[in-house]
Image 1 (cartoon, rainbow, N blue to C red):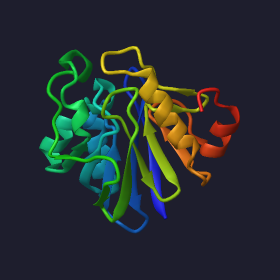
Image 2: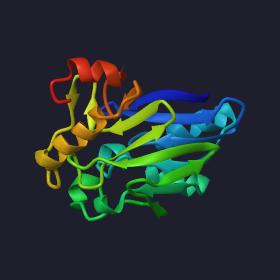
Image 3: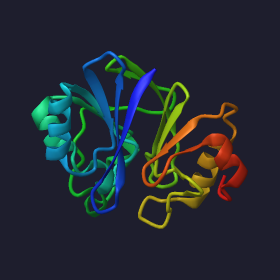
Image 4: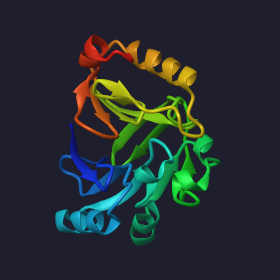
Length: 195
């Protein structure tokens, strides 16, 4: 059973997720968009070693802390390659990464295995990351809403297809969005007008 800590960071209160196995000192971060010094101190206080950063997409509020964290920890950084060509004003400069992943890939870091679902719409390379019964959605799916598609690289048709795909998942997964409160897939199927 993974331990999941939600850390809302920065001006946009982007949800950064800290994940580890219960008895492990190794961990993964998802979308550390802000406050790398704070995150490094959290890791040090908890006696954790950062093995990898997994990115749901390339917008600055999700990737802003990556370069400093990677420089200090020498961790691996994963992103979908379709987000590497986004305009620098949306990414706060070139995105730092060591690895790319895509649809159907399984990434195992810190003893945790994530399945990658390519869910374009918010950005061309947006992904959701499934860890057992937990789904980390970035800005694809929010509680009661979905990510915007009006920025460069956004596509409402692709977003509709991605949301339809998530709605077709039969299990009631815990939904961990990029902003705002968590939810469940059953709740979103029932009440989210976009799903």
